[in-house]
Image 1 (cartoon, helix red, strand yellow):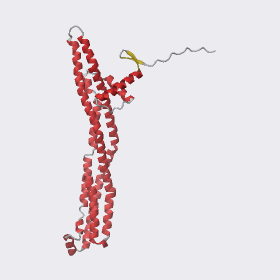
Image 2 (tube, helix red, strand yellow):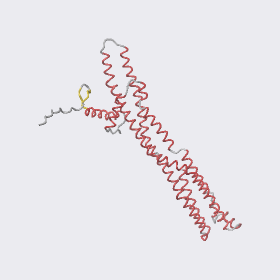
Image 3 (tube, rainbow, N blue to C red):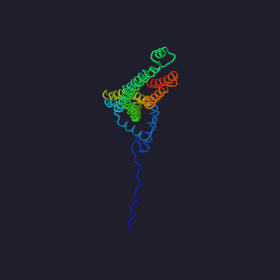
Length: 325
């Protein structure tokens, strides 16, 4: 019969020493969660959700803070600040700049080319058309109009071809916006965690550690100036950290405002790309086809031709002006 194994003692849950009492890791996590959630109001971070991983990151940042170290205080959150600067720089480039200006110029050139077609010469009520009919006949005006149309169509084709690199660059910029949104959210979350960790540390030093140190030193015999130097250093650090927190809160607010800025920029670029695509894929081909059709309908008279082409020119002008506005 096999020997009976000795009964194993129940495994004790891990515990840590906290505030002169044994506390389980679960209790410590809960206490930290309460501290972080309470600090949200003090630092205007009420949007912080408080999930377990985020609270743990705040706790880790808190543990790394060397409060009276001026160099550490100066470099605190420097990496996040640099990420925010890079995001703002990339956003300024993604807005378009010279690329959108190039598309505007192409649209203006297309509009100018289309306006070279002298539609007014077809107006049967104008003195120019009457004089032309008397000197050359009405057929000459239609021939000149077709020549003007051919020249305008060629100039428009050249402008559309020249605009393709700028249009392609804008489309690539639109594809980058998903990454910009993700980076902005990441920077905002990291700034929030840094602000919360610094706020909790500041409150601990200001409300607990500094009064305790002052009380301990005041109970000593005499006044040791070197011992009280620690108090002065702690007070100076509190002032510096308050200023640091103010700057980080302002930067966090900037990251929050960047979100609608990103959406507006994305919407504007999307509208420009969409309008230009409509112009080159729908508006211009339709304009050409209807123009040629109107010229072919010679039996309708000059008034019908004048009315039809005038509507075509007005529609094209409206589309192009929307793009350049």
